[in-house]
Structure formats: C-alpha cells, structure tokens
Length: 408
Ligand code: NIG
Ligand code: FE
Image 1 (spheres, rainbow, N blue to C red):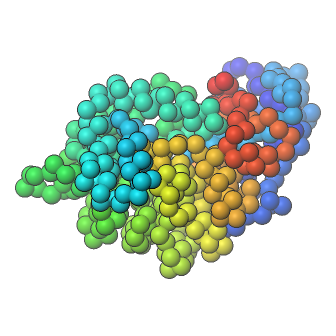
Image 2: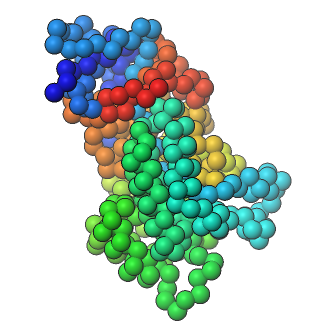
Image 3: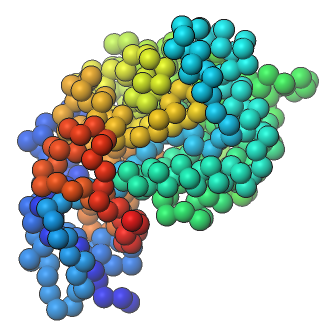
C-alpha cells in the first residue's frame, strides 16, 4: 500500500457533511474547517480535519501554497452530452420569436438531434462525450450523469449507451448512464408493434445483460408521452430493478405525479410545477432537480427552487447540457444564477451540486468529504467560499482531483 497523501492546508475546507437531505439551508449551518487537510489513500478519503493535526512522519504531503477553498467534486445529475450535430438554428429561431411548433416544422427540435446522432458513428459519439466531459471536469464536475434518448430505436439507443460506457472507461470523470428511450415518439416508427413495447421487451433486457445503465428516464409531456402512456414503461423498468427518473412538469404538469407514484429517485425540470406538485414532491422521497441551463437556453421561467426547499423538498441542481434547450453546459454558472433568481443561500446552491445531486443518482460515496468517500475535490483560488457563487462560474478551480489524483 502506498503511503497516505495529506493535501492542505486549505483556508477553508467544506466537507458538505452533517447537513439534511431535504429542506432549506442557511449559511450559518455550513460546516467549515479552517486550515483543513484531507488524508487520501487508494483513491479514497482516509480522514479529514485540521491540517496540522493530520501531519505525521507516516504521510506524504501535497502542499497547498496559496489560500484555497476545497469542496467535494461537483455532481451533475442530469445531462444529455451524448449527441451528434448542433441546434444553433433552433436557438436563432427561438430568439426570433418562432414557436416550438414552427421550429419542429422547420426540421428542428429533438428529432433533428436524433437524425444527426443516428448519422454519427459510435466512435464519433465517444469523442463528443469525452471532449464535453473534459470541459465539465475542468470546471470541477467529477461525476456526470449522461442520458441516451437521441437514438429512439433499439440499435440506436444501444449505440448511444455503448458510447457512454466506452467514454467512461477512457476519461477521468465518472459517467452515470441513463436510458432515455422514451424521449419522444420516433417520427419514423411505422411498425405494427408499439414503440414502447419494443423498448421494454427488446432494449431493456440487453441493457441489463450488458450492464449499460441502471437508470431509466422518460419525457412526460404533451409533446412526448402522457402519464397514462408511460406507465407500462416505468412499470417494467421498476420490475427489472432500474431506478426511475422523470423529465417532469417542464411545460405542463403531470410528470411529477408519475415520478412520485413510481417512487422515482428524481423528478427533473419542474418549471411548470404549481403549489400542488411542490407539496407532492416535498412530502415524497423523490428529489426535485432544477435545470437552470434549460431556463437560460429557452428563455423560460426557473424551477421554483425556493418554494420547493421551503416546502421541505430536496433540491438538486443540474446542467441538462444538451444541444437543444441547454447548450451552455456550465453547472456552476447556472447554479449560481439560479441562486440569484430564486434567492437561494450559498449552502443551498452548493448542496444542490454536491451531496443532494449525488443522492439524486443514489450515490452515497461522493458529493461530500468524509472517511470512505471518493477523493474527488474541486479546489478554488480564494480564502472565502462566498467568492465561488459570487463570480457566477467565472472563478475556475485551480485544481480538480478525481479518485485521489490531480487532473489539471
Ligand atoms: O431536458 N425536455 C426534454 N429533453 C431535453 C431537451 C432535449 C432537446 O431539446 O434536445 C431537456 O431539456
Ligand atoms: Fe433533460
């Protein structure tokens, strides 16, 4: 066994531990270790505490020269970074005032990305995921959920999921794959069988056999699948042991009820959620995920994050990085901006991209710094953690560590 490595001293070490999963958080609650240090061995945290107390002859030291703040590596619990092509045309059309229907008629929308993704080879998709993941990693994001959903046939969904699996094996960030075969009804589907039946009977078993994903998602929306239509898909997914997550209440409500009914780990979007859905989610174990990148990309309302937290809900914040509604793909920028519009404390914003986001992926070994957790860190060049959200994503990490190794 290698000698343990002691990293520090940090002006402020934010372990993000000892905080509740649900409900509002005040900055006075945020645990801060001053002159903190982290002892790492074999990619995991052995111990953390005051640097000088962890120092001994038995450890090597990775010195932190300037004043720095150390946080858990960020977790982005909702992205679509496996895709081909671009939707810059949609963006221009939207900003010119064109409606969703007009854009779809002009060849835009999700189906446009399906067409472009189907044209890409699996290797080309891997390249795209790798380059986007590297950008996220530089920004401190060490775990990234990635959805399929631009294939919309058994073979094309498999191509996407295999590309995600391959990319995960060759990059430093961890990718968490999710099957989103129910992203919309494929426009070219003209078989006798129902699309969802084929997905359930043919795709799900292969995903299990090849261990391509342990999560299943659907877009529950008027333009995609109704709450009624999606039931057999989630029913089967649940029976097969998949975790459920839902694109819910983005433009119309209904999705969050489906999420709660199926015991989903998360309900994501929620821009259209009303008091009823907010209460429903707050009382459930389903984590509410805000996607401010989609609000910024579409010019729409933000998820009612303040109300969700005040009602006692758990709030994760994710980038939704995708070519259509959320092309920016900068989690810290978006989470900071959501904070300004929704009046979130720093602690609520940071919780939303660390331990609460990890919980939305049912990961218990990251999103917080404690003994046994993965040694994933984002280190910022400041002596005051408040500077991080204040700079709205423009203060970049000076170091990012994944499994006990510095990445850049
Ligand atoms: O999360 N809402 C549905 N799916 C994506 C958008 C995908 C796209 O437009 O390509 C989302 O915003
Ligand atoms: Fe999405």
